[in-house]
Image (cartoon, rainbow, N blue to C red; front, side):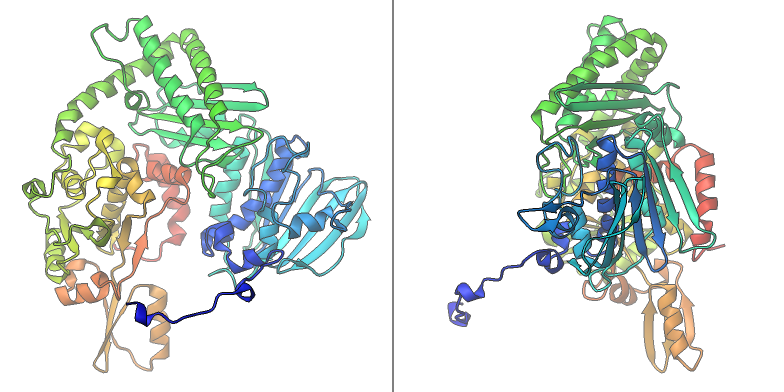
Length: 637
């Protein structure tokens, strides 16, 4: 009511002006996404992006990224070096301006860079603002210059410190531990990004070195085949349908397009798009142009060669992209990205270039390689037949109105609320745990769907087979989104889908199977932030009349070290070991529980991991297990 509102003055003195890089320090999430691991690693990428831009301009051939003791990052390149001259307007050197002023650099007009990526040009200054210390060293004009900064502000002037015949830039920085949740760089995370950059920039050499371990961990990436090698890497865990990777490129008016593609015997579409080396997760005009040309060209060829009969309807885009792995990489002078996160390309002119390039060059490839063309057409026709078979099964999964509640799975214990934003559903492993969860839940907003055993591995099945799986049908019907062509995330009946499995090997396997299904067939649910993993306790201890639960080994160890006694410690292996009250208190009560949100940090890495773990090839899975065996902290035998 209005009488509860306190009157507060709002005058000119209440306006705060944040100067220099203060805005970045005040709201770091606006510039790097988060202050968690994702934002921390983004700092590295921003510095590397400047070196990549030098490579795009044709001046940089080598980049070295080092993770030094204390999580200090050093990035060096052999590009031209940041200009060191004084900018008269500001009476400061170009180096200092680039490192202390947002939207300052060689990417905003002029001929410094014809093509560039980076975070809207704010990159390296944001890194400086969020670093406890940063030092830049520039080699150019036969001299070496150095300047140091702290928290975004210069602590020294730019000084000449030596002579050198080489050129390049070296930036060393220590992120501000008061900004980031945890200062710990992941070698694997940075390695994935560096490998991706090397694939996208043919013949660019990137070295990554981790000096925090002995012996130092080192990897070197250089690909003379560029995105052709990228495709070979992505399909290394699959069975290629044809040996040769299809590749073509074209340029027009300052814009360039590269496309590499190869079909495999699987059923999953893996198409990734890039604009100026930026992974455009949401696609955009370059993806639209590719899909349109691919569908038209394959259908035209199939008709022309009599592989598709006159009475048969055209192959759909979905049929044609089954088992396709493709990379579309475009480079253009003025990229227009939709949204601050740069996940969707909006340049209309690039669609025409991609469409014409793919249309003419793919048709040429098919004509020159009739055996490969026949394999591709045969696979797409099989996909079309499977789609027709799946159409009838899919009709059963279409969302019914709320009045037709009998369409919901019989074992679903639904909640009474009908507002999806307030409702959640637990996908529970086993009828026993499902029974406990039904007793434990808050019936107003929590629904329970017990799942019997391990669901079908969708990585190895077409949609028609998937829709014959009773457990998957139950999930689809309960969620109300439909699947395939009918999928609509807007129809989701719950905005929290919580996977709750046992804390053992079988439980982990079931969780992976469910996540594989969501990633391959309900990806918008993950992208919308609707999918979670429940964290059930690993241990219960009792002493002095107290009962405490622990979710991590480290938490238990720290607690036990503080006690002067040996309490009774129970290790939970299954949800069924807890009664309904315990399940509610530890895992389902919104005020006490811990949920892990499943998100899409890197679609390419996710695609690779799911293919390794759930695909047909045994060797990649064995190699992955051997490599990561040392990271396993608990294993049931």
